[in-house]
Length: 284
Image (cartoon, rainbow, N blue to C red; front, side):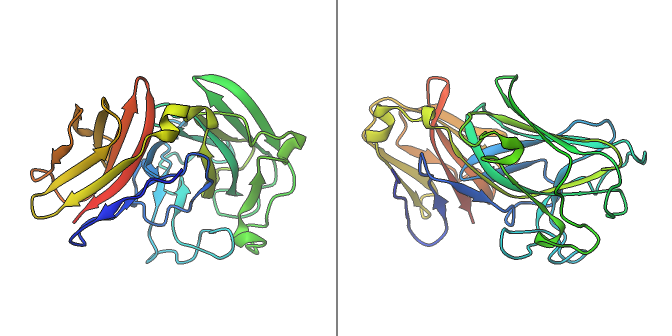
């Protein structure tokens, strides 16, 4: 079910998600050095698991153009640890991505660039991908062979394709998680993640949520977000790009945002402890 959004006066764009639809995140509109990203209105946190090592959004086309992989062609933006200040070599690395509010998802595929610190092919080691839900391990994928060549950048611009339906001989693409952890061993000291394909877990959507429709309208003149919904009782939270709640309330059909600066926001509707649906919007 897609919820239609309307934008007036051309000052806002809003996107809605389809509860069971597949979502491809290529990070191209994300902010450089950010440790979060927002995909289809859902915030993911980027977790650096090694002391003095930082994984974040790499978005520096002036330094490295077409260094990522968008699935069919090279792109510019991805997650990596090029800002690392840990100068130890040949000790591997680790990072994770996690839904900010515990929303459950399934993962279909992604691309990983796996190399040594000089971006050469690694000589020893492998990759372990761990899917977690509520802190508990749901699945573990171990990959030790079949990596792309990071010196000739082939195939896929040097990125290795990971298909969660078949990688490791087990179908993990239907298993619900809220966190992915990537752990590299040996001299795999550099990792980059691009073109992350996922979808909301089917258990998120109840029969009630399927039937309820919401329309969100931005009145630029009055600087208000107008909510039209069949739901009699609802709660909302408005997040800024850093993941801070800047407004929250319940059963309000007019949300004033005149005091907020221009930028990216996520309007999240919640029912109990679950996120019912979200909208990503930009105030210009």
